[in-house]
Image 1 (cartoon, rainbow, N blue to C red):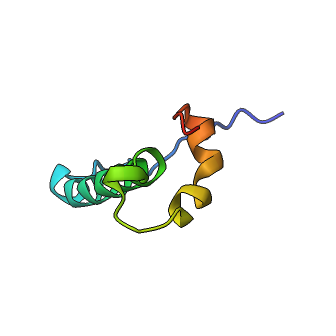
Image 2: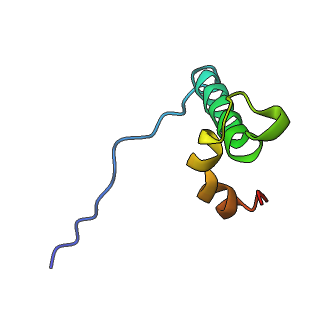
Image 3: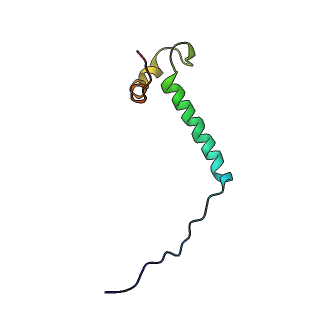
Length: 69
């Protein structure tokens, strides 16, 4: 048997908040847009006429607990 041990030499460097912030804002906006289309895109608040968006996200509405009928 050998008594050698593995000693990692690479130390992870922290990512500055200035580099993460634009991506976090972008991801947050996409999430808010997705929640709008899944949760509120029907009736008086609809951006698109018809029920195409509602039918496209219908199963996601039930999965996330939004009532729709």
